[in-house]
Image (cartoon, rainbow, N blue to C red; front, side):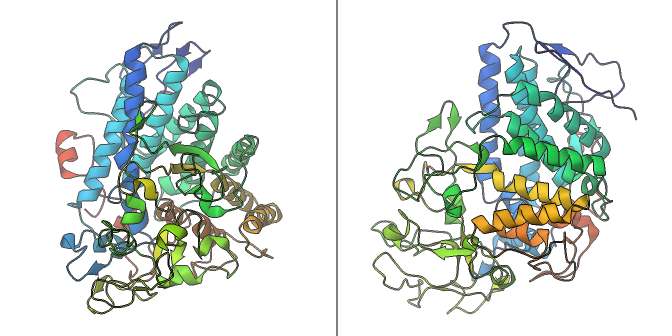
Length: 536
């Protein structure tokens, strides 16, 4: 099946940015007239940004599919807590089936985001609005490709038809993403907040597409990276490096309540690494984009008694998400990213530290926190998918506090910006492309520069992956985990490096069908162009 390419004609004409078309003589060209951009396009563009709120913030949506299926995150059943008919356990153990509700919810959320972006393109947008909509549509398509291996879409001409959507296979989707993201870079602002689509955000997403290209084409056995693609990754990364981003001196400032400057007095400064983020700001909206529930990032992992303020004690967390000892033990002792350290504006309020939390927990006065049975609250490295010892089940499992609580808005409109794309990942992607093109010395220098800023000792050698040891500290896979843990990239990295099916803590070697999620049954009925993924 041949797919027609998309062209960009100057600044006033966009040929259906955001979609390719089946060779069916559909009128796919949409011309932007000078002075276009009515209020309807602007309003729906804001709605498309808002579509990202639950999809990316929720503990049970995209985060869950990308992290709970990996080696760095699990949700143990603790007595009766977090049982939920096993919906969490099967993700870490790779035992889900075609009825898994989280997979269906994410599929629907991505479809809504893609559909709204397509509608923007049909409402006489300005060139910049159309480029932003195309970026958001590309982001939804990227995750469709990553998670499901199929990309349903509509052309602008048929944006509101009731006919079944065409579906792109991986090769066509990759071609579409590369063409569209390349095309919109000149049309997007150099910087945009960083809460709106920008040229650097488009470059970042294009880097992700090119790095994952071989895995998208064959998830079970990714092919050798194309040298031309890797050269483009390096060029795109170098362009982003010119954008004035700087690695934060305090790693956890990237994620604290003041990472966007909305909570002065918390942390040691704002994030200087944000390329694209969701603008939570402690109020209900931010220029039309609604504040989302980022409190899930700490509620999902903290114990019920992790903050003993009046009216909060017993409800400070949901006591679920944990990580495994292998991950915790992989960090160098001096690596600041491991954390378990005090953080201004947080530790002095509740006693809570940031990073990977292990051991006895204390309140702000230095007194021991207790679990609900009166036992000392100790976050222990030992953990199982089903915890049964009533004296330890509430504390087992190292917890992760990457986004530290905004105590001024603890369970409402918290100020932490949720970062989608971060500068440190640009450096990691450049290093990966350097390794893929036999520039080991360049890659080592890139990684040692990053490690030096995090207090980790320099490496003397660097390889992509050690398939016999996922935590080998001389590999890029391990470095990506230390830098990007709980940022929703780990599943994708494990697949790209060819180790997703290997055994790790609390997961045996498993079936290749788990490289993709099932297409929800309701979607198969509604769109016969979708085909169920093998094994489901």
